[in-house]
Amino acid sequence: MTIKHWILLAVAVLLGGWAISLQRGLVERQERVQEAWGFVQSQYERRADLIPNLVATVRGAADFEQETLQAVVDARARATSMQLSADALNDPQAMENFQAAQGQLTGALSRLLVTVERYPELQANQNFRDLQVQLEGTENRIATERNRYNTAVREYNTSIRLFPGSLLAGMMGFDAVPYFEATAGAERAPSVEF
Image 1 (cartoon, rainbow, N blue to C red):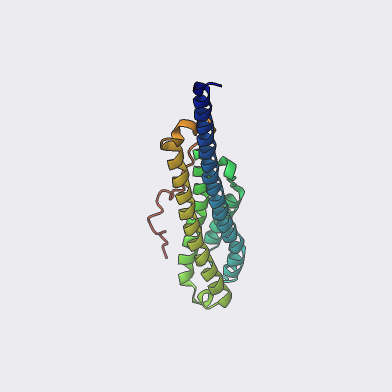
Image 2 (cartoon, rainbow, N blue to C red):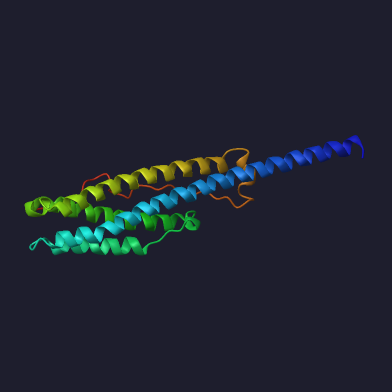
């Protein structure tokens, strides 16, 4: 082999090593996004598991507004029927639908908890207070996990958009993943009229 062949071989090996390293980094970031999404789903599942106990406890208040309870039950049914696997994270419409269902459940729960203010016997119920504390803690965990998910998405999306990742990401099948965004109107507190 001539020196020219050795140089070409060395360049090919370096480029191959660089491509492999880049691909490994993108896969690691993609896995972090999927892991973070799993944590988000876990917290949503925890919330969904708490709701039947909360509804049963509130239903015990004889004159509690059944419409408010039914809204929570219906929103929970929609939210739990809407599954978004880590493989579908690249679909912005699927993410939007998932977020909308979860947002409806959050709104229904907020209205329920605000309405409970009118029922002192319910507020005095230890089971209700315990469930309310667990639900509030779960809502905080959901917010934390969504923030962690968005951080993982930012790192991943940045790596596929910046040079040199942008050169190979598309060819290797790495597509951008949408962020978890607040639903429209989430900045307003729910209005409950007494």
